[in-house]
Length: 152
Image (cartoon, rainbow, N blue to C red; front, side, top):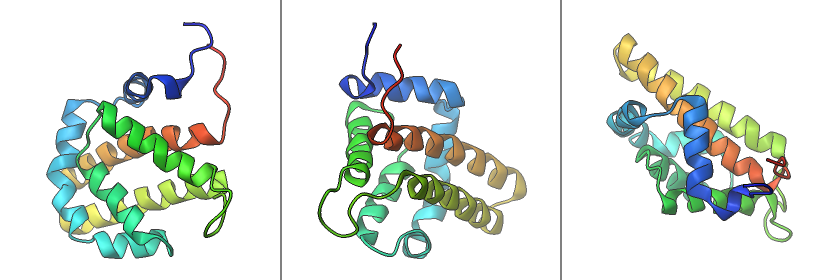
């Protein structure tokens, strides 16, 4: 499809991103299995990553822990990204793209430390890799509001 825009078919775009980073059903199962470790530290993680609107970050963390790759989840991610890239008014205005990238990097690091402290080494590595893949997919969706899509 020439001129295809990702936002017109978010499930397809998210599936393509999952394929690109190698996020499959085994990774989704690993994310879901390690979710209790993450969610029991939700308040600590949201405080470390975000000073304002922690409730929004907590919701994103809970949604991410489900590892859902559905129509609803893909458009939810788009809405999150657009809320950061197109906030003309309100607290803080537009969030610069580099801060969104930094936040994902900080989340990846925090999760790796969390898994290392709470899980056996092999499971900690598996969980870190699976969450990292999923967060990269999320980052690609979040950046749609900042970067014009490349022609296909």
